[in-house]
Length: 223
Image (spheres, rainbow, N blue to C red):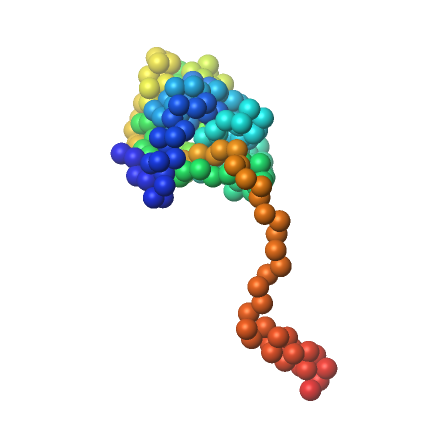
């Protein structure tokens, strides 16, 4: 069920529906599913950052998951908040809403691990790390940029397990599903700015600011 998080979201989405949108691929991601639900013309990119860059270059929309995070084995390399601030002056936030994800699951390759306790390595998108910690706390985590890639890693046997979308896991045919869940995600639709972003202005002084500043100066001089 879709829950709108702003009064203008419905109008904005209706206006945008006939346009082009860029979002995270490959086919099978939640981003692709959400974009397909709202748009007919979709461009899939390798990252949300590339989707926003595409939107800027081609004056089109970009759909980004507010919960997205990218990381290496040891460090966070990108996140929604960083991307949002980087887009300042280049893309603006047009609409925000909450929507259920596709059904997700935790699955193993039974040739490597028939039970969750036997999992030694699990491939996940960083945003789903809580599920890896819950179901396979003992496992080494391999981070990838999209859940379909995690499923591919498990299917090919480079890891023992994955957190992926149930439909993609089912298509892999050689994976065993252990549990299914369907959380929600908050989605952010960006558009090219329609006007120039104003220059930063000086902060407005509080009525008591001068008095406080004078008091601080007196204290600093020992008065």
